[in-house]
Length: 388
Image 1: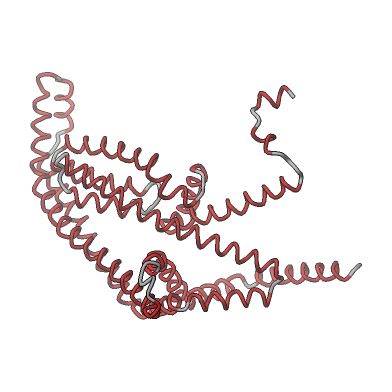
Image 2: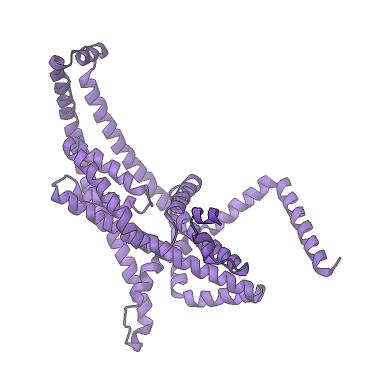
């Protein structure tokens, strides 16, 4: 038995012993893991904040004081402040528009429900002459219209109260976690202002502890992941803004109510790939249905038309090309990510699957080149293969 074989055998035995020990102390290992995650949470969150802020910050920094060498030291701080104030401004503007219109919508819902119930009652009563079967069925059901109206109003008020309570608990949670957020935010600032130095340190560590070829491969995967995640994030935001603007303009042209509110909701929910816009569609349809049922039908038709335009023309050019993942694998990534980690999983799994898809594709092409398989083999039609 040579030296390398002995070394590999010892590594396998050590790994097996380690797995056995972990299996014997599974609960303690789980508690230790949760403790480690809790300790690292501020730094993980800080890294995530830095990554998100770095996408617009890098583009702003590239256009500031390009020809003025004396202003180099002010370029990054100014880019950071512009990015931060821009995001805060967008959030405040969105809340300024959403909160008053949501309050107005809830008030209108409470006012419109009794009228809608009365209209439904009149419609059913008008059917007595033309459809006696329906009338007899309604009589046998003994429908209490006043009770239905009061229950619907109670439901709307309960939903509104629940939303307020949810918001209260959310902000209470944010306040209780203020220390964690401050640590994370401070850590993100250090990352953004010293990212070149941190990059150099990471490269030094990789070359110090791994073989040169392994270190180069790890750096390549890191750069590929950064490029794909950044492209996905920026593309998804641009696509959401375009889709929201399309809805605001189209709804304004057709004189539909809550155009700005529905457009903002669809823009925010469109950040969730594939299924997000349908959440906004549900909200918009419900709001318009109370005011004007006919316009709600028009809104549904309009939504599916705009969704087709967005899915076939805008999304492939804005997001699809930058990520480089075929549609079938996007669906797989969304399904797996949603089942495992919810909304966060949907957002992370698309670029993650794109990275894995790119690496696997490169591996396959290298294997084909090593076996000297020509492109003509997999581009042939089935009929041509059968003839041969």
